[in-house]
Length: 162
Length: 344
Image 1 (spheres, rainbow over the protein chains, first blue to last red):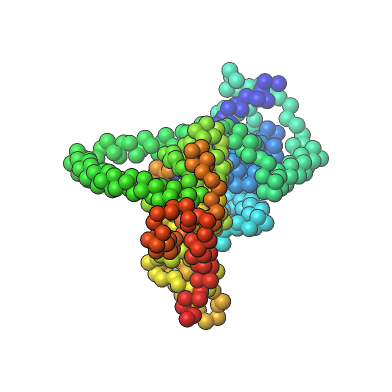
Image 2: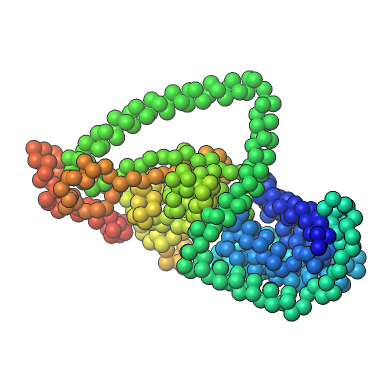
């Protein structure tokens, strides 16, 4: 049973790092390009170890994201849970995709997350009106290969799964 | 944990299925309920405060990193730069102290005059210095994180100032940190008045750091470029007479029913590191012991001294007399039809 939990700290650490990267101060001009770090990491773990990271973890991360970004409690949680669910559903196909295709899928997932966020913000009348709102999906797609390689190496070394 | 290659274990064959779908549905419903409760009922302040304590280490680490890099830059800057800066600050300090002396005298004089008029306006304000935690929040919403929380006496709705003007108000309070919304956030509006003539208006955030919108100003209202907007204190959140913004554009477009007025915030909203939290305290007992004043509750509209001055000149020996008579009230209420001036 202990094998199931081996390497859990790597997963936790990567999720915490994603939160830190979300908070890291950047120049104002670069802020709109900030990738959706938490979503990227959650998607990776859902594809790689779906038996360990799933909808529940994504939801908890979403709540934390709501607290640090000052949004409505449950907004990011809802979006991330849905994204994690789709990633879980697609994980067998996604593992066979070439990397660029995976990156494209990640972009679609993140667009979807942003759409859910936009929907909630629109309901409470605080929707951003700038097209720049969608830029993180693009930067997340471009960063996916690096996130993928980094986390894959960490997983191969520390996390119990094949 | 002790071996990098743990023994194989049984992987579940289906990682998604009825259980996962059910879990998703439950979590979605939970999120919707949470959002509704948070938005409609505002019942989650405690939960948010607790969670903010949980993420405080993250805030702390990120802030520390930013601080260290700032500190490194500062320690590497040359001695001459620091000396120059020091001299400049010394001079500024002297100047400000000089002004403060005058201000203290004016404040006591003002208080004496108000006591004479037995005005109800006796608000005691205390300032609390807070620092911004250098973490990034949602770039499309203007919120900042402060390093003071309920432990230091911060409360929801407390106004936030910097050295030059009003910055915003506190939105959520945690034990160690608090989140404030800036006056430039699109969802924020604050009651203001024009310092020159007391015309009341609203200053609404636009989502841009250097622009506020002043809606619902009729076309013939007496508004000029360069007018200073100060808080009117009417909303009950912000204390009166703090500078908010300067009007930079007044446009009259024929098709619209109101003038388009925009202003630039007085506070350095993007740049301030240290901010002041205003703690408004109720009046001390010796002032409340005064008889309930018959004067209107309208706060110090700048038109009042001019209107009250001739009265004071006509009846100097009886300070109680003005209280019983309504005239001082009239000029304060009269600014309402301010649009009449230009019509005539």
